[in-house]
Length: 602
Image 1 (spheres, rainbow, N blue to C red):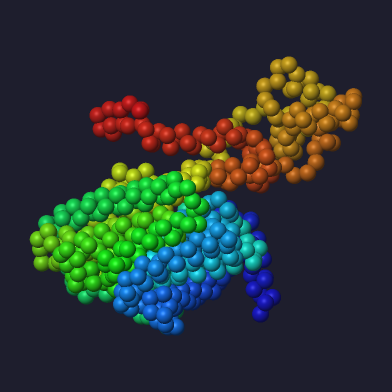
Image 2: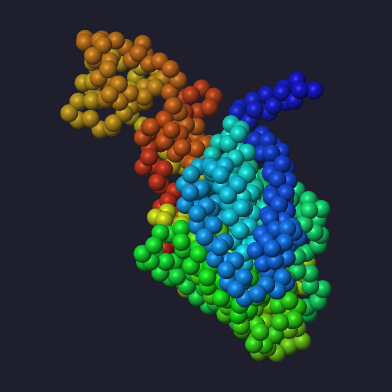
């Protein structure tokens, strides 16, 4: 059975080498390999999500009731005395501070920025201790009352597991990145039962590309995690909403206003998170004590409104179904925002999605009291999606996320308007998202444009120089030195061709000097000295592949030859590879009137 498979792989690889592939993407057998590994990563992520939920339940029962119980429960349901509500988060904050200082600093933060940093700046390599300490520290933070979601730590831990599995095999950095993202997104899928939105998180936030080589394995992992979730955590949408919304023009207009309000709230929240973090940096104490300070604020907030403690999924559902109204919403939002901002800024361990969903649903609950119409439940749903779109800068993920969380597609048009408006407001008001700002503060800049890379789709024949000064293979070394590298030298290097125009190699001053040192008379013909296969380009190849070849081979110019007989057709230089970007510049800045004349470039 193995022999036919190996034969197929050899035939496939030979076909791929010998065939000029002109499709949308270059196929690779590694897609199958990564997808197979992603099956196990998705299963591991689902188990990690289940284990973290159980661990949070244990810590919650120990901290607020002194019980050995793994059932997932909210701190408010245990009715602890006020001094326990204040003390428990502080103890948790102290433990997390010690874990971060003497374990690894990588456990600090809410997960996704750390995954981004590993992808972009550490070749998708994560440490094994992160996979152990991150869920443990998060369980302590959330279980002792931290107002965070479990999804951030699960995403980070799933990513760490994917990265570790990728480091076991002989893989490229891109392939490790795919497995890291597969683990991270599968963790989100297992947490929320949102496999489509989780896959889209990879596309919008983590992969930095949309190619089969990466999206297929990520989708496989998310699918497996979603399939296993009902057996481990529970079936169905997390926040099921059965109401069917039949909206009119007026509701769509109010949906845009709702998105704008979410954008303003998102801007304020993001600004305050980093302002408070700056305040922590001014304290004359080590950062390991910051979580304890933030936890004290959490405890005080928990005394004011116990429902703000913990993950709060049940509170989100109450907001979505209109069971929390009036001043109770205001109290919840103010306390939740304050304790989340103060504790998150301290560098503790916890997720951001659940608090954002809670604040968005609360904002929508307030809007339901103001906006007229027959659907008061609509606005918390829209606010939840809009808040996520504005803070995280993932509009399409937010739309699908809200749909999968509720299992309700009737609000899709309104969600599109609300999330897009919130996203637009966020872009205008903030330079970076809450995720990328954290990385930028470490001196690492992320720019995430989904623009067309002209080097990938423009071919060599479109940019190469066709008129090339060549050197005959029959010329002697001395003749080459006198005729081409004298005082009137025009070019740094020259292709060497035979009588039929076939390329034999390329010669520059350094190579000429070597020949003259070994042959003082310089009477040897170039044809007798040229050896080895020259680095060449073919006219149908993409400029992107040639740019990579130049970098790898450390060349500043490469001759272009025909595939059949290696006859010289031209030469491509580093300068030639800049030509495609002039078109990009023109498309960005040249304004023209198609009918009635041409405008001016700006």
